[in-house]
Amino acid sequence: MRRAKAVIVVAFGAALAWGCSTPTDGSRNFLNQPSASTRGDGIVKRLALSGRPLALKVSSTGFAYIGQTDASRLVRLNLASQTFGDSVPVGLIPSDVVFNPNSNRAYVSNQWSQSVGVIDVASHTQIQTIPTTGDPFALAISPDGRFLFVTTNIDALWKIDLTTNTVVGSIPLIATSHHILMHPDGTSLYVATRDGGTVMEVDWRAMTVARTFSFGGRTQDMAFSPSNQELYISNELSNVLHVLTLSRGEAHDIALQGGGEGLALGDDGKLLYVGLVFNGAVQIIDRRTETTTRVLPVGGVPREIQPIAKGSSVVMTNEAGWVDIIEPNDTIVPPPPPPPPPPPPPPPPPPPDTGYHRVSVPGGLIGIAAFGNTALVAQAQLGSIARLNLTTDSLATSIGVGSLPVIIVFNPSGTTAYVSNLGGQSVSIVDVASNTQTGTIPVTGDPFALAINPGGTFLFVTTNVNRVFKIDLATDLVVGFLDLPETSHHILASPNDTLLYVATRDAGSVLEVNWRTMSVARTFTFGGRTQAMAISQDRTELYVANESSNVLHFVTLSSGSFTSTPLASGGEGLTLSADGTTLWVGLVFAGQVQAVNRVSRAVVRTVTMGGTPRELATDDPRGRILVANEGGWVDIIP
Image 1 (cartoon, helix red, strand yellow):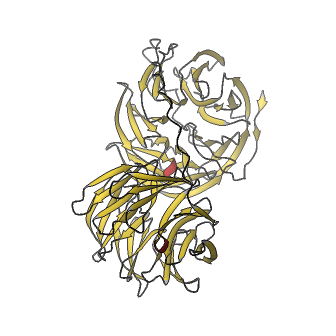
Image 2 (cartoon, one colour):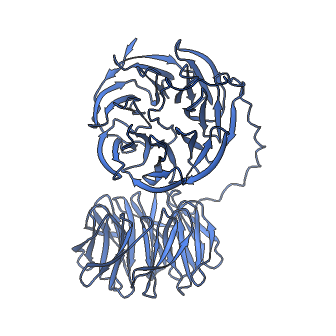
Image 3 (tube, one colour):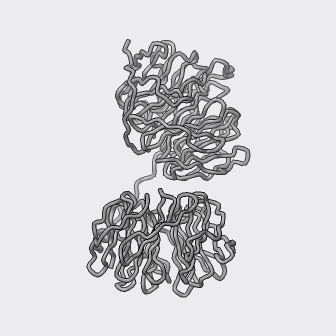
């Protein structure tokens, strides 16, 4: 017998939570579940499901939620009829889901949206989101349903009070965790640290580490024995299933035929099902004798496995595009239909367009604004803004502002710039001539988007309290606000000096606001994730980049109707060329910028620069496009 070493982990690390399975929440106690009426018909039931199914959780009321990572939604699986029901739009890359004790609420980790979605099960809708620090993955919930636990890729475990949706505690982890598991008696939370090769036993009430069990390899999913005396841990790299006796802290291993990820007990606790993620198979182990009874060649990429609450079968997601329901006697999987013959190879693509000039600017660039011969760029990581001389295309100086500067706007005369300090709950006032911060304007919440009316009398700022604030620049005081359905990262003042356009990002809409009365005139609903906007020089059209729908929207302002042009990827930054003929869109996930002809609405150029292009600005005197890249540079496109 091998003793698992107990080590208290105090180091931070970093890892991207992607391509691994979801955790459990302590609902795997089979002692009081009724026996199944059948042990199976020998055939695995396969249900086709698109969108790369990954996350999986079975509720106490007879259905399961499955996360479709590519489709940004949860789909309901009715277990009795073995059919899919309605789907719930959620955030980007839904990676785990968990139910509260009575299954009237579900929580989903929206990995790339840095939030946890709250699902009302009765209405089958995401009713709100809880922001997270870093990309969230694993979820668990306390037995009383009051506290939610979530791990993120900044290598930490967070404790969230669900009565207030606020973080009330955290623990650093040795590495990013993709699986956490609440003990059935509610005393401890177990955290598998994946690349750290450990499992941490956490007192979740005090948020302290009681023991750390070191295994090496890559620790993944976990499950308790029916007596709750043993903890089973699948290991993705060591090709073993660890059996940890909790009372003694000792472990021994059961050999696997490949790397183990998903894990569940079935057949009323008699069998262990382990998904061999790299082998396209499920290894089934007699729990009492610890011998393998069979290996099912399911194919694809098996991910999460969950027991079906009132029977002996299990359900499993497969990232290749299906869900399997496996009964104890199932040994045959009908092979999937053969794939269609491959199409003829396409002609070789043209060489990438690299027609740009690059200026190195450090600091995690986000926002950029240009006026005359000057461009200002937000250096979020350095708490400063960089000044570029556009006549020489060189970095002139940096100006200290607040914490996490993100967006910059000039006043109409170009003498003053305003900078939103995301981490400082303020807007900096910068004198452009002297390159100095002359003051700050406090705001409620973390600010992001900024705009100034053409008359230069009012500044508008959005914050994460889901409001747009109106600030009188004569007094630097807030004189009005408007509630928003979601946080806005982009706003645009119309040249008519009355209207303001507010993109609500996760709400997928744009609000047309009369800023004089701070009231909504119209709402344009697109879906997806609305980001930066531009308006035509004749004021007849509004343009909206959509980050998750991969399109650029063209809105006819007289009628409110719109059409969309497909983009190569999700659009974030957007600007109109100096001559008003071309729209330039930054593709934040593709490291590209695409040019779209405003009249024909066709993509006419794709520029590949790599990195993470964020905000765009137009260098009007020289007719060039400026692209702030979070990778540490500004690209200037002639």
